[in-house]
Length: 478
Image (cartoon, rainbow, N blue to C red; front, side):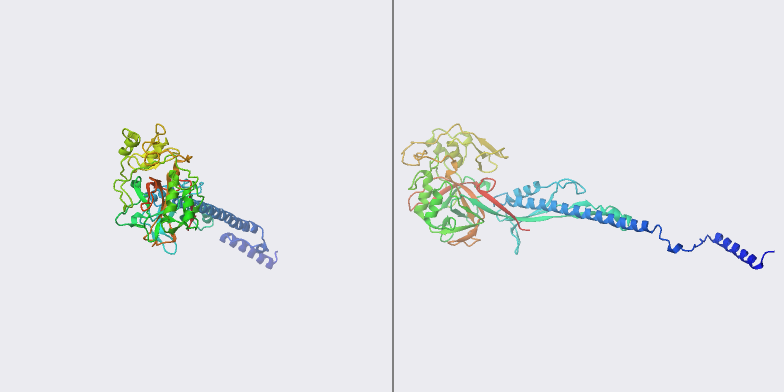
């Protein structure tokens, strides 16, 4: 017979086991709460996710930094290239915008739409900095701001965020960049001449850098001061030397070796004799020795409306009368309505290009590479400089110099700085920014006083596209 206590215990154990099976409860074994097996896997999964997330986030940050740097470099390059085209001539802003648009950089596949960066907006300013003023014309545009179109980059960290329950969908990061640039031109070997900006003259209002100004004759330096700034006669100092001898030597020199920056320094006084001898050396006249004259020193007629008090002519001159007197017969068809500079090159047998009419009377010389639209090439039949058509001692009839000439036809070409005399309040000696530079062709010798004026014909803008002596020091402003 079983012990009654053992029987009761057995009954209780059976009931307990039946209850556990009925309720699904698990029996807690001694020590199970102290068991750490499997815990390492949990920590490993958690830490692994964090490490992977950190690595991916680091990659994303690196990709964004690279993309931002690439886009900023593209904006900087576009702004600097565009600013180099702001030379004050007609169409300068359009050319600057075209250059900015074309100066795009490959995004190296980091963007969602891999390819070249694009320019979203180009803005121009006449002043930028403490005072910022929007430009109103090609002439006053001195700064350019280029804004790149924003680019999207897929974020690699977003899937990690989804795993961790913190994100959904495709995440992207948008990158943007902009840059502002201006230029400080450096002009070398330019004669010490300036002209006041004719656009400031209400009676004239002519932009001599415009296409339709090519071929017009300009009173480049009057013996008197009429039409120019008070106390100034169209002269500049040479490397801070405003003396007559320094200016004379700079005019006589084939290359004066002087370079100037953004500002020009105006000189006072007419310095008539020194200027006359400096210019006339190029025509094989005057007291300079050696003279180094041009190969063709012929004088050309003035514009039909050019009188003693006219600052700029109409560009119409008696080419038919000149050709009949100096060459005989009719003007060659390829020289119809040509400028004096174009006739000069033709007589020297120098190939050049002239506008077919749509760009005024612009000239391209020398020809380098393919011609732009609107120009035709002129190939003269041979050198034909007028000689001994009259008095051999009068340059009006004799175009061949007696002294050894300079081979470069540019010996009769000078550069003048354009200064906004009204806006800059130019009066006598002082430093002033140049609004632009213009190529001028000396049309005639300088007579003795009281008519010792310097006349020249507008060729076109002097800038980095037209001369190696124009250096662009582009600088980023922002």
